Length: 284
Image 1 (cartoon, rainbow, N blue to C red):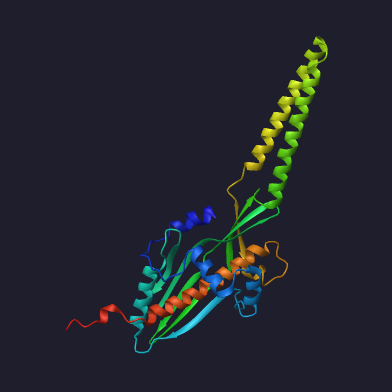
Image 2 (cartoon, rainbow, N blue to C red; image 1 turned 90 degrees about the vertical axis):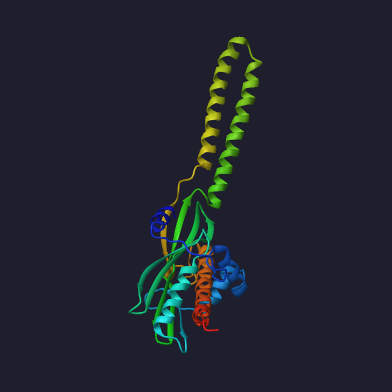
């Protein structure tokens, strides 16, 4: 995800901390476990009975919030103040994509890293998400939409369980070859001096080859690239498809995304309905 994060970082801005906002992966996971349980595949299956993708194949949570007695301008200012305080930690980032006071529109995008991961075959998957948060404002009303249509994934070769097993097997094989070479070396030393010289030379060559093989195997098992970036459409991942080669990662990502979306609706509703501190009268 380095390439995406590098591009995204140029647009980011820092915000003041807000303890009520659930924006880091650890916070979202805690919220998700409390709300849905920690069996990710089962939780994803249960959620899929309640949540459907919209017409654009997006996971889209919406809520209309009634704000009686508040003008469009008051609600808009509260929403902007919330975004100013929303993205709280150094590990969490966000950017305002669009703001239009006249139309009563704010569109922001968050970036949350490492919401799920999985070792599968020879690959390791790390899943991140970049959900949008949209606020539409009218007189005495606001509509909050939190939506996303895909996961951002970094795939690293050599990090999966199969790869680790193969690396261990190669190291074990190299050790056996090296041991066999040492045994041949000892046997050759007990022969005649002329034969010993010839055999010793061969043994030395074999030992050197074994050492090189061991070194090569060790290097191969520990060398990893920076990973390749992929985009997984939510509509092509579990629980919306049953056959998913990264089902474990997809399940947790889906539950984490749902938890994030629900938490945003909760805290924004609280923020928009709160009494502003500046309404305290100065005539006292």
